[in-house]
Image 1: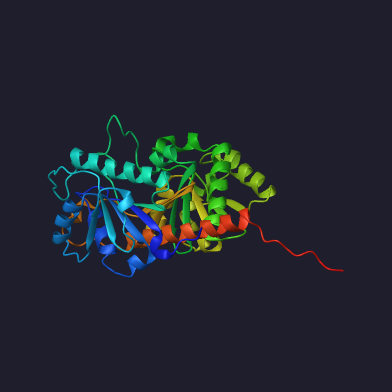
Image 2 (image 1 turned 180 degrees about the vertical axis):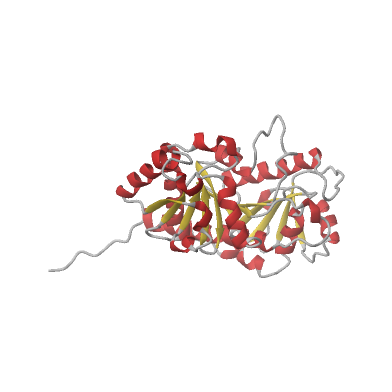
Length: 349
């Protein structure tokens, strides 16, 4: 069923309340036109957000609800997940605040999983203060990979620039041992499928960056590129996937090679995110590709250094909302076309 725009329910986890998450969320939905595109559902507490919006001088009008069945289309719905109050101190890492960030995220994920919201957009969390006996994940992506169906992959998106990762939150000293033929094939298939169903690209072209400087210089600076990456890409290309590489990472973005491809896959976190954020910081979106549900987030963190100062740029969060809606519509269209292929009339002779 195709939904009307305003009936697309965007679940929002509020993130770390001592950071800039609540500020960028509220500022995003001050514009009434946003409520013509979707209906936001913020998982938090309406009294607390009402207090916070005063410090941001936000004009957003909040509508508190106690259960998801009370959602009102065209309003900024705030689901009251907790009633108790607790101290907030902008720019400070606090385990108590981290606990509520996790509560917001896990409850929003549950609603996404059960189809009570259509997409999920997550405000930034602090990876240190969210850790507990109940939540032992380095970030959003790993938890979503456990709770939802599919194989999660971090895909950074800004217009036609898309950068995915073979490994994400892995120490640099351990990256090489994670780069296997099985991993490369799995991640490339995930990126390809996402490009087809989520971005409407029929025959995507994918570039893969080398692991070592200069792709190993024929084994002088490492053998992984020649022994693992290159033969795996060759095998996939021969099987019909338009994947190319490995390319030396140091010059790939600088000389504009990325513009020739629909997506670029980096071997590790900073290899992909440093050039991505350099080219698109403030406009980029982190999309968790490969799952049966849609989740996006802004390309920045909690930004404790400017929290509470009314200086946060909300454009990345707004772009995250736009992208979630676009992918939701594209995916529905893809499923309509593939599940109900067009019938052709038999020729009359």
